[in-house]
Length: 528
Image (cartoon, one colour):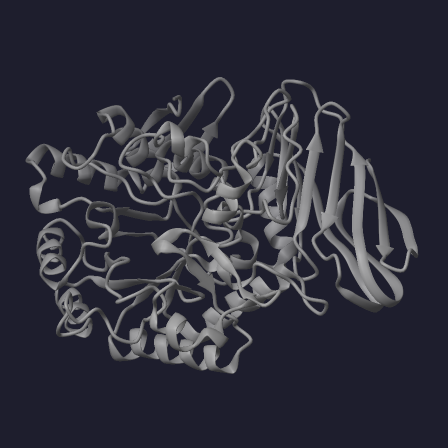
């Protein structure tokens, strides 16, 4: 049995320490005087063999987080010019701005949960509650030390404080993950798998009513009743302005399109980024006071759409605006599902009364309240605050129209667009599927036009998504499918009903299952 040594330090210099057995549910409570927290930390000796593998969950949906070994190095942004990083806001997409990256061989870090794997034996280390701060995990193969910290510096304290809420388990993959979710009391909101279409990866923002209707007519020939037809980014005048569609593109608005989707027997989905706005939007021009303030300046989230910023969810005007938005989208226009993106923008910072994780949880609860029983597909969100609060959730980065992006893109951040990295996240976050929510691995492709993926790469992406995700969407113009492609689509769709799934990742990734009454093996090559 491993011993966990913990320490709570206040800004006043006072410190409190203790030990706990690292087994099962471990809730560390300590009585603290009035003051502010400086650090909350714990560590334990957990030596591993050089051949063992470690997985530590990345900060948000898009953060690349495969299993790593004793020789691997987790890269941050130190290789990039500092001025360029700040100008483009690259550090804001992940945890770079509040968590150091040692960039040393065999040292990796993550948030909320992780595991150590030797063959089929898993040693799970996970948080049970992130309200008091993200649980930051760092492991060093060389020293064999697992270090944990609460992301709660500066939080005001006094009285009983929950320093850590942890869960430890060892055993088989399903055994340890089932036990963790049972201990949290988290269940998925739905067990339904969804398939369908998204407009993004063929048309991107270049959509209008005519092309959406054309895509709908083509998809309706192949999709099944109840499938999803999702209108993605590009319908709004500017990101942040959600009450009225772009009148040039959608002169009659979106309700007629939602009605047309329903008339085809499909469910209607719509993309929004509710917690952010882009420079030049009406919110940016007229409601600068709605933006989240950081030292007298609005919080800059990144370079998408020419630059975008966080809304302050504590502003009554922002809450009222979001109520209007979701009432219009869900009740007046009649959409059945909302894909809510760039959600990390709600909680980049904490305060002396709330951690950034606590704020993120509160933001997700707000979305659940606003959407009622309508379906939410979360994206660009720290995962644990989304557990049990969204119906479906992206668990990887955006796929690309090529395999791994340009060399320049490969030098950026862990959250970049990459088909290869998307597949790896689908494999290594598979345990969340059907436990936290339905996993969305992003889209697959069968088309040959407007695409640089090889046939093998397309096959790998489509098969992994069909087997390991609960959301299975394409962005192809299905009206251009050949008979061979239509047959392939139906074969892949049937693969989603495969049973007895087993994933092996030593010596190459293999997915074994029973499909169509036969035992089948799928090899997953994510090599460069």
